[in-house]
Amino acid sequence: MAFLNSSFFVGLTTFLVAITGMSAIWIYKKQQKDRKMQAARVLLMEIRTAEERIEQIRDILLKLLRPPGVKIVEVPEFPMVFPTKSWKTYSSLFVSDFDHDEFKLISSFYDYGELIEDFARRNNNFFWITTEERARVTQQTIAGTIEKAFDKFKNDTEQDIDKQQNKYITEHIDFISKKLDQFTIPYVPIRTISEIDSYLKKIQTITTSSCGIKLKRIAKLDNL
Image (cartoon, rainbow, N blue to C red; front, side):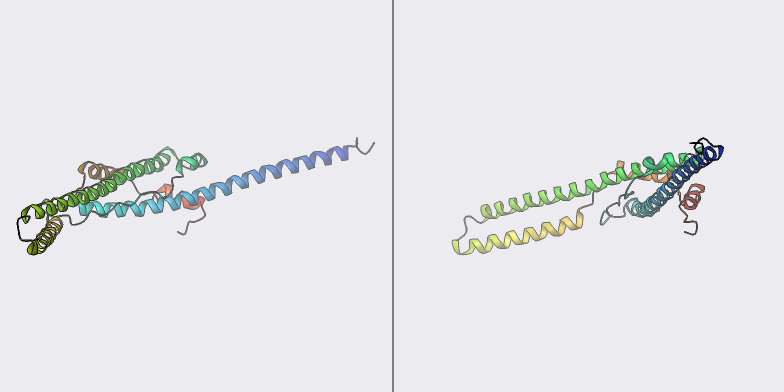
């Protein structure tokens, strides 16, 4: 009992409590540092992928914004900008690492990227809508051609009627198919293209900016 009340025991107990507390703090800080490192790696991967896809979108846009009179043979499909979007999830971890302008730069990158992605998705949807519409019109035209063939040759002799009808239908369907390919101009909604172009001019590269350098350092990927 005397030992429990001794100054040595009290000092030992205090020391052990302090060690335990310091260990808990160290473990917490280590976990936070590791979490921030992993978050920085996720963000870098997202941003790099987004920057590559933004360049792809720029290339497609150059093809679509050709001078008047230059025919667009095929409308390429825009890629989506972000594979995932983690900035809103992890941004609070980097409040002490970025100044106001840097924080705003990354936020605007994600905001503008999402807007570009939204208009790119709309443009891609228009492509499939017009493709389906062309298929519908083609089927209607073929049905009309068959009906005309029956009316045109209904008074011919029975021996020739099938031959004449088949020849008429085949020639007209072949003609329709060739002319559709020759004269159909892919529909590109100018509003979505203009919006994409507008936000592409506003978005800035992150990986080579001060934000990107800091993210690489936090992620321990300074050499990449």
